[in-house]
Image 1 (tube, rainbow, N blue to C red):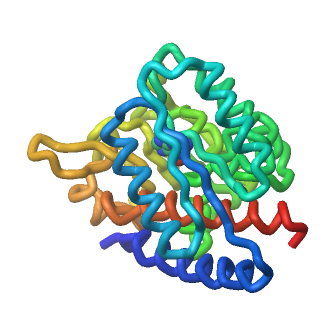
Image 2 (cartoon, rainbow, N blue to C red; image 1 turned 120 degrees about the vertical axis):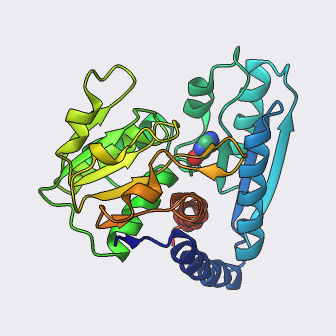
Amino acid sequence: MSVIIDGKSLAKEIRENMKQEAEKLKEQGIVPHLAVIMVGNNDASKVYVRNKSKACDEIGIEFKEYLLPENTKQNELLDLIKKLNKDKSVNGILLQSPIPKPLDIQEAFNTISKEKDVDGFNPYNVGNLCIGQDGFIPCTPLGIMKMFEKYNIEIDGKKVAIIGRSNIVGKPMAQCMLSKNATVTICHSRTKELKKEVKDADIIIAAAGKRNIVTEDMVKDGAVIIDVGMNRNEEGKLCGDVEFEKLINKASYITPVPGGVGPMTIAMLTANVIKAAKLQNNI
Ligand code: GUN
């Protein structure tokens, strides 16, 4: 039987720590403040943003939402980001992805000042992660690293297979694992023999956004399985990228969906906002 990694309770523990950090900042007259920009009407994004807002409220982080219409122009989006960059009361800026097709999201991420880039998507922070310097690390990989720390799961020298090469999860996850001396394979939609690449891995991180992409026959006994997927099954129930029920007796550690990686992502966002507030106030 695997150990089921309890992301929900670890996230709660982190949020409690962040609440104390926020209180300490308030004693010094600093109210941590996150600005969130959403463009258009994406139902999934609305749910994510609502959950981020709830976590910030609980901790005492001021949360301001900027809802831009579907037909927003690139320069209007950039102007809002530049305004928030200049606003000294704002410590963190998050542009919720995705945004409508004609807009260039990377140009928008590049415009977020590196000191307020709590998602870690600005090339300056991406670069810092690559060369092992301190900066903002994207929240999902950061949350997964916290899980490894909490459960004392060894990474050094291990074989890690990551499924998915997004800028939000797959690529920064690979850098995090590399920084802990893992041997990393990144698999993606053009990988020819996925099973062959994954079968040997000590640690599997599934971030493909495809239900059941990790099947029982792909996993070696005792592997650690981290499921970043957020999919819906035929009944509309939330499920991950991994055949959870079939792997629960094969993996050494496994994350559930829901209650695994998801809550950790949000907790780490609040941690990044607190970090930004401290850095901007030389604390
Ligand atoms: N969309 C899905 N995940 C994320 C995330 O971590 N940050 C942002 N900004 N958008 C997302």
